[in-house]
Image (cartoon, rainbow, N blue to C red; front, side, top):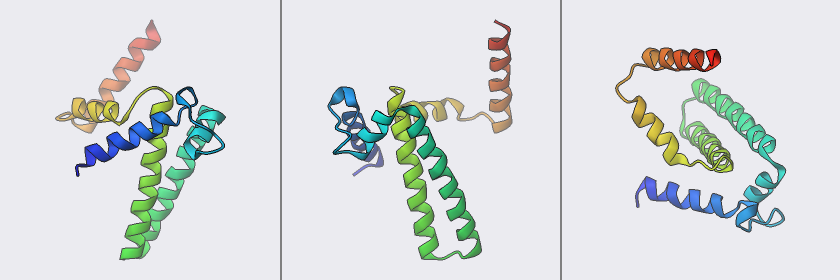
Length: 125
């Protein structure tokens, strides 16, 4: 089974939990997040990102199987909540993958400079 098909299935489940698609906040954690609105979804991303950092720090102190597993678990939580946020904005993991593909071959410094130039252009409009 491919990783892509796992992400496709997860995306479909997340999409099905939207209130407009019949998601029930009393029956589904994701539907409850959608029901609470974008602030709740974005708050979860902040919480999960903090937990990833803490797990990474623990892993740096003690590099063993338990800490590796905890780090991966926290990263999975972060990715999951990022996918919920993407769905809120009618986007999916594919949009992120496409953006990463667009950046392929650019150095990080070049890509950052390009984003700054685009932002300056938009400010001048």
